[in-house]
Length: 236
Image: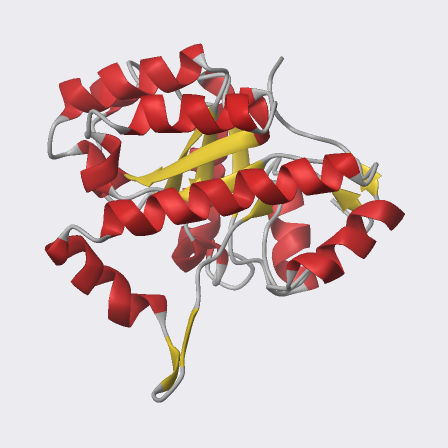
């Protein structure tokens, strides 16, 4: 992946408080999880992402899938699939332009319900990825049952892959696993050319991180997409 070869985007939520200033997601997301406000936040992010995709398409901009981190509480709720289906229809968007990211830990709570909902999402052609892969405790017996599209290698392994053989081996193992399961592998948190070179030598082809782009507002991304080569990595 080069800086003019964009395969997808990830929607990030930030809170700029009028008094307290910038508040990190790590500070307010756990509170939202406990208070059940997380579902409202998830829904807002989903609708904003779909709205942005719709506006880009209206402007004639080639669009790519947008990934959204979904809470475990929302994933197993009865409202998720109807909500997404409704807004996809509202904005007249194909499901493969939305990617739902979940963490391994989410799968441990109610695996059967997770599988059921994920299959319903796949029926809408929505892509599903496991975020921070390698840091949780998901069983391979569960992994083969999940209707996944993408495994995202956790940044903790990518960070030292160029200087520590153990981390490189873990990255290589995850890449081989993804290939054997016919899944797309994405390396997260890539920040240096050395990491890119190491990951490429292990067979990685898709990267995400500050080495390529830092978080940016939609108006900057609009110009970027207009000037870039677009290659969506979704499976038809």
